[in-house]
Amino acid sequence: MPAHEGHHRSYDAVIVGGGHNGLVAAAYLARAGRSVLVLERLGNTGGAAVSTRPFAGVDARLSRYSYLVSLLPKKIVRDLGLDFRVRTRNVSSYTPVERDGRPTGLLVGGGERRTREAFARLTGGEREYQAWQRFYDMTGQVARRIFPTLTEPLPTRDELRLRVDDEDAWRVLFEEPIGAAVEDRFADDLVRGVVLTDALIGTFADAHDPSLKQNRCFLYHVIGGGTGAWDVPVGGMGALTDALATAARDAGAVLATGHEVVRIDTDGSAAEITYRTADGEGAVAARHVLVNASPQQLAVLTGDQPPTPAEGAQLKVNMLLRRLPRLRDSEVDPREAFSGTFHIAEGYQQLATAHAEAAAGRLPTAPPSEIYCHSLTDATILGPDLVEQGYQTLTLFGLHTPARLFDRDNDAVREELLKSTLAQLDTHLAEPLADCLATDADGRPCIEAKTPLDLERDLRLPGGNIFHRDLSWPYAQEGTGRWGVETRHANVLLCGAGAVRGGGVSGVPGHNAAMAVLEELGD
Image 1: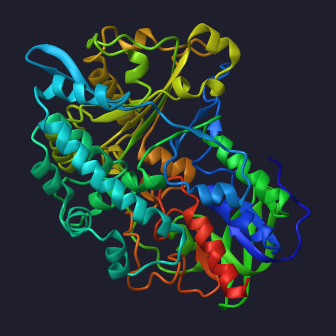
Image 2: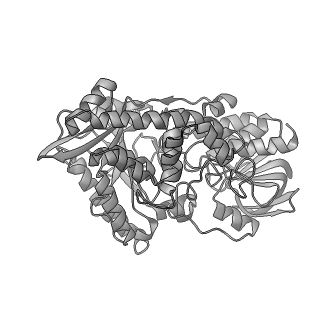
Image 3: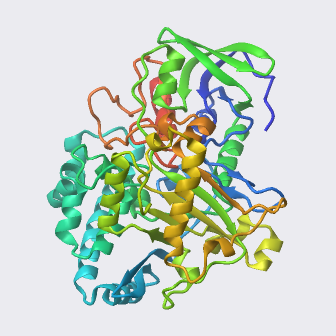
């Protein structure tokens, strides 16, 4: 998308950053009749929610960073008239393990009967399945009550507690480390691990961390859409941000790429935004400024003291395969196993060991990770020739790899970690993954890996943290403001993932920042 050089000198709202939250805010404000300018540093909008062709000469358009959708409210899709769809995965997850010298695993999905049988096959009885049902019935009830509040003014803690209306659920999710509930309710190590993984996505924490940041991560992973389901974006994640850019532009917003904002000067009622392009510096005035960037970058732009960055802790790997690998567990079809979340080295004790090793400054001996295959649910991201030949994508997300581990040599540690992560996967395959990898036009394997330091460099995520900071509770606390987007500058709002109720691909901070502006203006 080319830079737009014909913008005006003054706008009702200038949005700093054209990621998905900034585009949501732009679309809402423009549809309300406000003049809006989006200034984006990169040559394209979308931020981390983009689709690209990472492999030379290969017609595969992958969700390069963000990759699944759960937290995006249907309300935003409807309000903005987005041409965007998601598809539900038939299988929730598959977790392989070796027990008594034989390969087996746990398949969750494909209907209640199959899931019940899978639990019995793994654990030898009904207890764990019944505990699973009770636990997720509880989180489902919480999800239905909390998710609608994300696009409302922030409730107080007491108001949200009343809305949940389940003291046991409140204690489990909001007051005690999630590890206590997992250990109390489940006996099987593998089942415990599968439950815990939702508390560790992009979050470096132990199951019993007293800060409860693992609980906050777990909460956001089980409330999405009021169900906790994680869906596949049709056309890849870029389909969402393309639709948002179209909606914003059609409503009258101006999207200017190649414009890096370097300073925001404000007196609380009017602001001047200074930006830099390839041709030099410029400035534009605005009544409101919405910053779709991290809290650290917001502070730099306004001249405030930046908060300490929250450390990222993940490995993101994109792959293209000529075919899916066969599994050692012959009772499970690879097309089912990889269509859901394929857990690797994520038993409960394995997760605890990996965290302890990383906390001690060492790469985990058995790096935990999870994989899914987008193209099994949505083949539109692959060119027709690749589909005809049976090619498939794999997306891997590794846990417990904090940014500090890569400081000594990012490239070398990335390669070491990638090798050991794939080796863990290979222990559950009947053939090496390397034998299934496609090659690009230059004969190189179609695989790329991103560490927290890579994300910090590419996307300016402080510490490589995919949530911009530790996730927040979805209720008001001291200084959070009415919508959770307010800053100490009255006319400067934070509309990125670092806002209260931010994190993930949700559009919620963008929606809430736009509502805060329109509410102030009396719309």
